[in-house]
Image 1 (cartoon, rainbow, N blue to C red):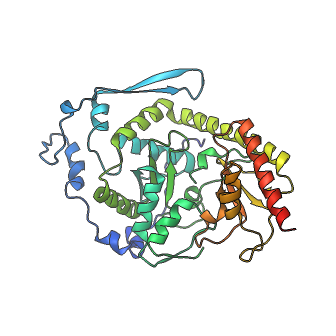
Image 2: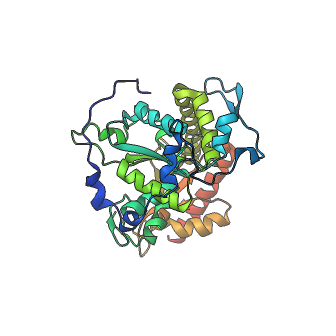
Image 3: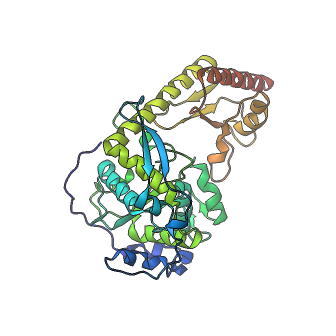
Length: 383
């Protein structure tokens, strides 16, 4: 974890730089006339007649309690209780970009891990209902229907339906905290852009609590140029008003209890947990699939990508894993995701993505045994 340092002086791109990149729909959106005035309610002495917020006294919830493990001693548990003002805020309409306490906590997190300072760099943060929600809104903020866009192939499968709906011409870091490689964790693009000698402001970073705190909380946050983040927030205000303030309050209660050192300790525990899962999975692959598939050992996350050594098809010299997985493997009682799901143009692929996060060792071994049988039988038919 990076040490605290003084705020550096950095040149950043002006807001006008982003205007050519903002979509027509996003430019046409206007801030909510009510939510745009919310910040004024916090002015001392202000009597607000603004919003139709329900009275907290009418809410039947009197407290919210969450029991968490200590990141420093997994045998110790602490009960956290959200009550009084924090409870009232968690049950109420709140700022579109997120409750202030959580946004400030995330802002400091970006300083610690990425050496980024929102004050003086022209960027901001907005909380979303998971990174998927923020990715959807970011694409709509930046793309007009039919726009070309460069993306990697394979790419995160969740963005493909969004881009297809926008009729984009596709021209070819949720796991940042799950890194467990032997080398030092690679720096993020968010950090690297401070080191290339150019004004900062060309990276939009998406973080998620789904893989490290709770998938069910549905919380993510975007850090990027204020003009882009504001466009995303305006989309939120018109689509779903805000991300659940109750979920945000629960997340902040846990994170503030952990502190940044505890957060680092917790992510170390999570990453090492998945490293052990990977090792078990690879051991079973070595035993059953050597000579049948090829793979590179992952250094983060909860998936192994492997390529099946298959006979060629009319559409792919490497072979096509889709039918093999969706039909034959399923018939043998094992399920994985064909690589074609991660290619923007739906091209055939011999690759397969396998998740190892939930399986017990005996299930991993049996799954690899079944896959070996499926591949061996398939290849024998072509001889």
